Structure formats: C-alpha cells, structure tokens
Image 1: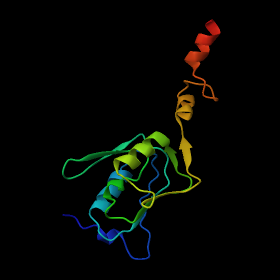
Image 2: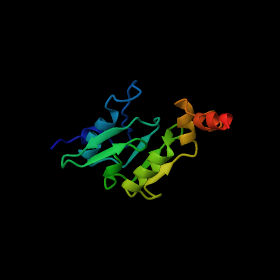
Image 3: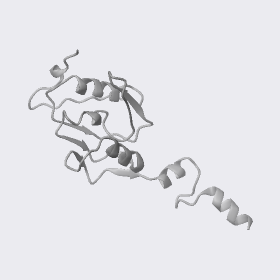
Image 4: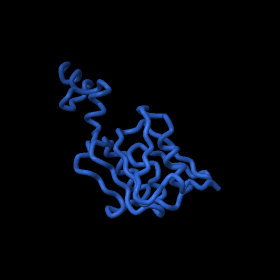
Length: 145
C-alpha cells in the first residue's frame, strides 16, 4: 500500500495543476493521492467540462467523471467537495455523477458563479443549431414546406 499523506500538511493547500487542457492525468493522480491518504478534509475543482476520464479502483470498480472531482467516490474520506466559481459543468453529467455517488447538499458545495453548459450550447458549438437553439435540420424542413 502506498502512503501519500506526505502530500498534505495542516494549514496548507495541496494543488494538482498543469498546463494541459485534458487527458494529462490530473484526475488519475488526484484519485490516487486521495485514495492512499487519510489526512485530507476537502477537495475543490475549478475546471471545464471534461471529455471524460475513468478512475479504476484496485478492486476493478470503474467511475467515469466529466463534472466532479475524481475523488467523488471517496466521500468517506472528505468532509465536503466544492465546485468553485469559474468552473464549467454540463448539467446532465453533473446530476448523473451526484446521483451515482449519492452526494448530499451537505457534502457538495457549488459556487453561484459556476457556468452550466446545456444541450443547446453543445449543439451550437457542434454546428447543429443556431445560437437560439433551433436545430438546422428543423430549419431546413420548415423552409421546404
């Protein structure tokens, strides 16, 4: 067993940070450190929606994360998880992960300045709809009638 308690000191903040936008291992590293330490109380994230990353536990259990910190499954180890202002989440992924981990409002704090991405936003970015959310395929059909 690994002992990662060295990563945490009373009165200090431990941060996992890199310049990569994704797929660089921050989530896996955070999950590993959190899994093998017993002296931490909370975790925060202020990232953008993930394309997704998997955490695989020693027993083979797998968790897919897109919105929550990759230590969400360790809720017996922390007092509270925070999603900080400036973070961006996809609401469907967030709600699904909250349900999957049975997180209560007392164990998850969400800052009021967290941006929420909706399906309308995703469709616009993918070029599937106009800015107001009208899908292009419905525009073509209505123009033909």
